[in-house]
Amino acid sequence: MVKLNNKEVGQVGFGLMGLTWRADPPSQEQAFAAMRAAVDSGMVAFNGGEIYGSPERNSLQLLSEYFTKYPEDADKVVLSIKGGCIPGTHPIPDGSRKNVHRSIDECLRWLEGKKFLDLFEVARLDPNVPVEETIGAIAEYVKAGKVGGISLSEVNANTIRKVHAIHPVSAVEVEFSLWSTDILENGVAKTCGELGIPIVAYSPLGRGFLTGQFQKYEDIPENSMLKMMPRFQPDVFNENIKLLREVEKIAEQKNASPGQVALGWVIAHNGKDGLGEILPIPGATRESRVKENAAPVKLSDEDMKVISDILKKFPIQGHRYPEQLQGHLEQ
Image (cartoon, rainbow, N blue to C red; front, side, top):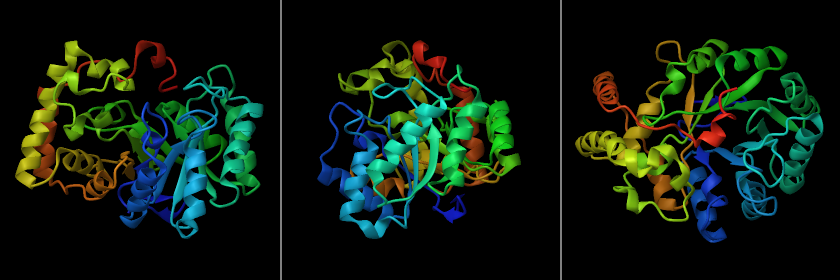
């Protein structure tokens, strides 16, 4: 069981991004059904963002509506929110004390005391603002009892150590999946394990690629942001899908979905080889998919060895983000 801020949150969390930040967001009714299914399934670590949509419609408005209807779920959920960007942009950071305070105040305004803000993180550190100022601004709210803890997003090992020395870090959110194994090689996972900081693994299903929903490039909707992502481009799609084909074979043997195998692979790293706790936070817009994600496959050491060999044989082609966004990563 992973713990965030000393509260058990199970082995799988829930990413809220797709409920508000997409070309065709689901209805409130559908979003509520997915959120309720997550809580009922023990996926109580909710991960949202002030940046997940417009200033007028993002995770905060949805959460406010949800906890108005289901106030009994507020104490069950551990809520982490990303912010600290220039309003209406993603992800152009403004880590100044003034903007960080604005961002947290906006979150608290929408939550209206219906739900405590357990974790707050700037979506990306601002290279133009000293990290001491940014983290110090969040720490003021932690000390005042308005925020439970500080989380980090897309940072490198050195930054984790630096921030943790300024103020204890409650979680580090980074991309981790069969699709993106960087943290196992760049020191991030080891550093978090050493410092006892849980890792929150976003996009554990490779932005949907590892679920098998995209069997060919043409399956990606025209209005999807995935059309911008290098790993989904036509020149590499057919190479990258070779990894999915191997995962599908394992899933068939396990009588499971490829997504359940992918989540099981992330979870299997908990406590292994000096690593700490790792919590995948798959997103889903439908109740059925939430319930599927809540039942990851348990993989044996032999299974993990097989998958390790597959990863070596079929390395993913393409960067994680478009070139113009790469500069905001892993500071």
